[in-house]
Image (cartoon, rainbow, N blue to C red):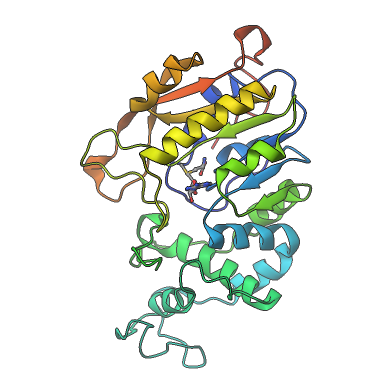
Length: 312
Ligand SMILES: C[S@@+](CC[C@H](N)C(=O)[O-])C[C@H]1O[C@@H](n2cnc3c(N)ncnc32)[C@H](O)[C@@H]1O
């Protein structure tokens, strides 16, 4: 069993048991259209299916983890302590891309990472650039404040430096294990609706979209500059209805406010509790109501206690 490499908002490790309990005992291939940190995928280590995310940096990252894990580890080992002086031999040794003074190695790496405008299909164009972007993403993820990935409206990663006594941004064993888990998997960078073509009868799809906010003021939907709005939630419902019509099993986790949507559509919906480490603001943490919806009838479920449910 592999483990997630990145810390990602909405990570599902604490819900693995509830999710697996609704999986069918048998299925053909496995697809995960909203991969994020991939808590379920890496724990399950399925072969032959697809994973997907609209965040292009994340997809570049997983491609490098799968295809060049040792090169990634070697590159990560060359990074310096986040508090160190900027490296004069690297770009942005004095000023970041936005003109701000660069005083620490961390901010220099953040500026280097952000030189790729969001959605810019031109970069990374080469294998060396992809390796560099993947290394920067992991380095920043493990050394930034609270280990969260957040972008501003123009797609720039904007999380400040974290305070860790001994940050480990290499994680060689996790990278190698994740690379093996991805070896037979198609990694895509599309909208989730690709799964209508990718999933065949008898396949299983697990969906974990950005959550619809529980209240008008909460804003959980900021995983990328593109966001995920109510129209996307409606499209998602239509997508799982079509999967159902195609004989594809699905299990979907979402915020409590979507309960009626899936219940009215005739799917099995249950509320589960989870502590979502999603916000740097401590007061925004805590028990958030979540639901799991599925078309897998109880008689075909694997049930609780399936091998592979993770310790953390
Ligand atoms: C809740 S997170 C998934 C977390 C994941 N289950 C984990 O364990 O870390 C949702 C993901 O969906 C991605 N996303 C947002 N809009 C999308 C879309 N239209 N199609 C596919 N992925 C999308 C985001 O980039 C984000 O990584």
